[in-house]
Length: 454
Image 1 (tube, rainbow, N blue to C red):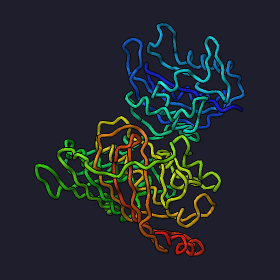
Image 2: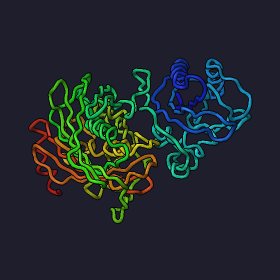
Image 3: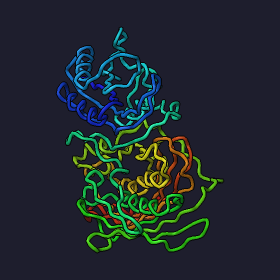
Image 4: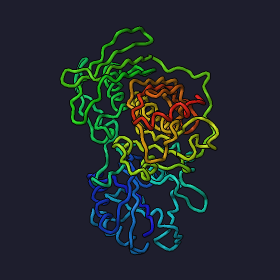
């Protein structure tokens, strides 16, 4: 069955319900293999109308391209779609973007879709689902820079095929409630690690959002999080931020996270009143484009191991055969990281998105040092503490690039420095992560040999 990519859009009625029903209907005419996050976008052209929800799904189907088009039109009509003025508002819009390797140019059906490279609301979710998808002009994802000025906001996680729903976005999952200096937040199954505890960057986002509730006009400049205990899925988290120092230009906060009265983690956050001008920063390294990499869960497929929901919600892109994403000549690991808060006006949420690779990418670096990356052997690297500093939070252009350098590694721990750039080259952050290394003796004996370059 050919791989088929279908764009979904809705800006009338219950937009999310229309998209959800459409994906279920697609599952009756084929197999839904993957789905992008949902993005909210302004309409391009046409009469005045409301904003759209857009997504892309990958479907395998036995239908011919022409029969598939007819089935999509039936699904649109079932959602109440009526056709009148061109580019007018609609309850549901379904477009075939690509159908295997076929090229069709007929009245009413053009494959590949002629407007893919001109629409960020198509290119962004298409890159999420299949970063390497290409036509005769090359990978579609390589055209993202040409549409960076089109406004788009990510409002969910990717589509969870197994549970037939869109996963929680980080903003929704970390919505804090409460007043004064005590807040509460629940946990989300979509941001849990394989251990059943919450993803560390999820907890840091909770911290940042509690500070935002207290100081919305400040800008976060740094965060450090120390893990005392793992926060289990299903827990109710109590967040207590305390301002410990303040001037007219900056403030420092100490934040504790508790579950049932027990301290689970402690964090410190520094804020500033005005943005800093970045004078000097390391340039973005020359790397392979994100179109040359693959989603991290696909790298795990040969190992037979399941990824945590947090990784599927985040979905970084890597190449284990090329650790530095260029030629394997340097002792670095680099990965593309999607901006999970793309389009937000909140600098606290932008900082949270940058923390994702800082918290998570030390693990594949440890696996690389041990010579286990891509094999069916594995070690676990629970985080002891990590930190991030944010010299520039003004950039909001989609994917990030993270670079991990291992500073030291013993038979029991690993520490590294992680730098993050925006896709357009802007320098976003430098962070550190200190983790345990947990595995069998046969694995740990490999550490001394793998560590000689560090």
